[in-house]
Image (tube, rainbow, N blue to C red; front, side, top):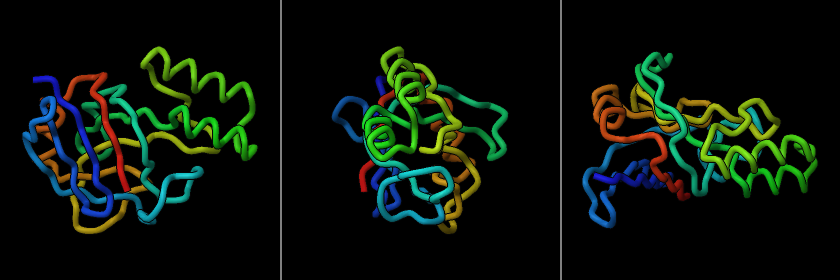
Length: 153
């Protein structure tokens, strides 16, 4: 299987595809302020755009987790334009994305965005996507590092 992930924020769904074939859909919760795209650290928004899974954390505070490569290139361009980040952080983000590595996680744009366990009762995360722990185990086992993820409004 060559998985691809799609998050539909308004529907609170995470869909797993193998190519174009839908394999499974999971219920998710989002950040505590879920409407709109993530702009900066602490806004409680789940980012939107195209990313990849850059790490798998078996010792997550929320059971297990998959790291999402936020901030991406578009976020860095906006951050530089709006003076949330400087040229050096911009360059570091672009270099990381080009190499499919972890982008800087401690910028004013925010970071540390994951798919993790912990439940789906309400929108409670700092900007992550949360699933039930049983679902997180399935995802953790099925999704390799490098998997593409698209997050839509």
